[in-house]
Structures are given as C-alpha cells and as structure tokens.
Image 1: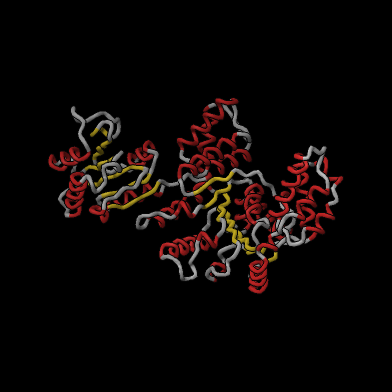
Image 2: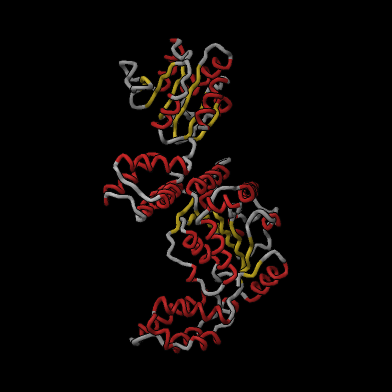
Length: 496
C-alpha cells in the first residue's frame, strides 16, 4: 500500500508532521498500527483528549485541549520515541489559535534538531495548515481502492451472507463503487440487502445516487440527471457514429486497454448555438452508461489567493475518483475567457492546468467540451493529444430538420405525426437551429391546445414558423463568420 510505505519512509527520515487527508479514521488507524515501528502511539481527539491509540481509553483524568495536551507531552518528555496522532485538529490549526500553533512549531524544531525522536500525524478530511508550520508539513492522501480490491471486498462481504453474484455483475458493481470509501461501500451493500435480500443490477442505481451525494457536497462539480438518448439527436450522424465507437470501448475499457486500445480522452464539439452540442454531451453519458458531471467555472473561481487553482485540482481529482464518467465543460470559450493573452493570470493558470490534465490523463474520464466560438482560444487547445477528435456542428440541413421535427412532434403528439406534412415544415424552416425547431413545436402544441383542437395540425406549426425569426435571421453576420472560421481552419470534422 502506497500510503503505508510513504508513512514509514517519511517517519524514518525524521519528517516532523505528516498530514493524512482522509475521512476514514478506522482505516487510517489500521494503516498506522500496521507500521510496526518500535515507537509508542498516543492519540488526541476533541471528544476525549489524550487517549490510548489502540483501545481509545483516556490517558488523563481531565480532558485536555489540543494545546494543553501537546504542551504536557512536550514538557514531560512523553513525546520522545512516540507517534502522536491528532484527530479533529483542523479546527484548532488556525493562525488565530497562536498558542497551539506555537507549541506545534516548538515540537517540530526539537524533532529537526534531534532532541526528540517523534512524529506528529494529523488525520483530517479538511486540510488546514498555518503558515508558521507549513514547511514542516507533508500531506498525504488515502490510497483509492482499486477495482480488484473492491471485487475482493464485495465478494468477501457477500460470502459472509452466503450470497453469490455472477462475475459480470460483480465487476460492474466494483467499477460503480470506484471512488467510494469502504464505509460507503459497506453501507450501500447493507442497504441493498435490507431492501430485497440480494444484490442485483438495480442496486447500481443506489451507487450512482451515492456518487451524486459526493458531487453535491463538493460544490465544484454538478451531476446532471440525464434523460436524453443518442436517438434524440436529429442528424449529426458522423458524430453519433464516432461516439458509438468510443462507447463500445468505454463500456469494456479493461478488455480494450488489454487489447492495446488507448484510453479515450474526449471530444471538442464546436459550432453554431442551439444545434445539438449540449444534447450530444448528455446523450454521450447515456450512451456510455456512466454519470455525467458538469464543470462549473463559476464555482471554481475563488476570491482568495490560490483558491481557484485548488478548486480546479479538487474538481479534476473528484472526476477521476468518480470515474468512469463523462465530464462536460460547457461554453468552453466563456469558461476560459481571455486565455488568448488578454485575460487574468488566474484564468491562464487554470486553463494551463486543464490542458495539461487533458494531455496526460489516463483515467476513464471522457471529456466533452462544447463551445460556440473558439476562434479567440489559444491554438494549443486544438493540438493533437488534447482531444481524440474535434467536430464542427452547423445549422441542420433539410434532412436533419425533417428528423428534428419528427423527434419533437413524436415526443409530444405521437398520434398526430402521420397527419402532419413534415416536408412543408422543412421547406419553411431554412436557417433554423435545432433549438429553434423545438421551440416552434412546443409553441404550436400549446397553440393547438389553447384553440381547443383535437390534435396538432400542419397549419399550427406553419403559423408559428411564419411568426418566428430563425437563428440565422437574428445572428446572420456572426454565423457567417463562424462558418468561415470552422470551414477554413482545417482542424474540424463535420458532425453531419
């Protein structure tokens, strides 16, 4: 285990403070106990003060504060030849609590000077490091459970209840459990058994809901509830075929990688607004059968020095933890506005971090970046290796508009579709985007209901078309310039 080996190595090297960023105190206790060093173990926690690390019984009759406990250990000499494990300490490690910070600093200096042989191990899910002791601290994270480890754990759990599942379902469950702690895994298994006494395919929904909870609490990513399917996209056949091929790889990623296939990175979909880019991002998640996460740059940007960069790093780490998943970066040009050199230094650094991760990532996080106008984005965005491919989405042609009309009419008034002259609608809707067409159908259905008709007629839809301005009417010059840029750049495949 990497964390165990790192702890042993840094303790042997005399590092004064090791900070473990973790929720699972029971698991960290097991790791610390397994170090088998010839040193004593003392714990301090906010509930009981100083306690015996192994059995958690209090060592003092009176509960001491963190500052009092460290001062006592330091002055009595009991800290020598000991590992001191601190829990619940992050609330005290602020610059306002100068006495606690001062005693920790004094202990660190004694360790470095060789006066005592000791190590402070802080276990906390919140990283709080005062500037005064920053140089003494080394931060570690818990090792994520690998798929094989999760399989073994789930198999052991089920064997205890004399329950068996097929190897295929076991692997699917293990993949879905990736990113969850052992506590969360056991809780979900308990919940599944309590519900129906067995583990089935339906229990995957419970796992996805737990992952949704993790995302909601992170405040940097959003998990989108996807209802859209690839069949909801009218047109964009080249893009859909490409996504279907990637989906075949993603749904059996282990076999694909064994075969020699590279881990899919993602796709950049750029082009005219309202023509299916966001729909494609959502449909990709459904096609891949994985959660859809959305990166919200508004939540990434912080007001304190270094906060934005930390938020971006945590968002990327969270996406990798939740993986396999699709990560949707919507309106890329707005998310990283000014990265052509005119923007804020923080935005430039965030963009650089994002591009480096795109280039180097090996995790099953499939990035779908959507953008309307990337003509002012840096050229390195389009460099090979960032995305698997880049597609351009144009206004729908006649055949695509026909399919879009049919999709939206069938969705709302399936019985009326056969009686509607869709060709007439297509002939009157040149220059309309997919979003325009949906809006026309929605308003036409509403109009038919308001007029107490028994169904939707061709005339209802034509009436709305005739009173509606298309996207090409409203944004004519801008669309012309976008089309010219995307067609002349040579970097984009036509999605149609």
